[in-house]
Image 1 (tube, rainbow, N blue to C red):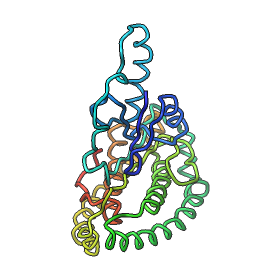
Image 2: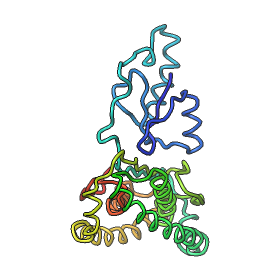
Image 3: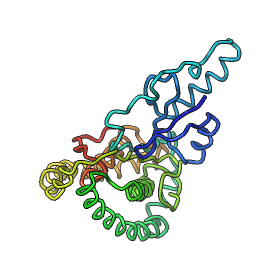
Image 4: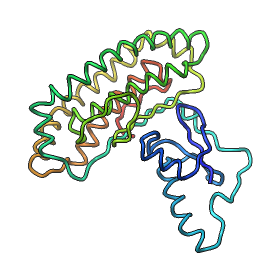
Length: 280
């Protein structure tokens, strides 16, 4: 079975099921990456595709019947809505058990071993991202397209940032890996590059502080206050029970996701106006 992937706004592949499994294990692709094979009616998260393939490989030899790979849909893979471009997909794994020791370590010594080393690296990368965003603004204005290389660089920096923020906010245990891009460690951010970007939206970004920053800023201000309260409550929950309440975890991830969508629009990674929601 030949499987295609949709990465950074482009179709790549095909790959075998074994190759896909290896890419998932190494973190080269995330469970949320969209995938398709002949016979599949629509693009589907790759982790679901791999599960289907595993079932087919077990059942098909015994049953002696054709699997999904034997069905051919003429015309190639279906088109994702809007090419899949610009959609912000963030997932942070909710662990069944959390370490009390790691929680205490992050609380009392985290500024030295967790916050400072990553913050210094991300600060310099942040300067580069600002320069890239300026270049991209002019590129979109004159060409109607966000340069692919710059786009991938900016997204990969944000992927590192999200991996780091998840640990700083106690949403996951473990130490975040240094380096850009997703690392397959339970935190995944995907923003597919749109095939084209709107020149009109590009110009409107000049006033984004008014029509995006003000309404979303007010909502996020109050959500962040609630988030700080829940950070303390969840900390005590982990300390005494070893578990992070799922509803609190979802709310905190929603705060980050909402802010990411606002950032993605303001920095022209997407032309989709950010929804007033932190839901996936």
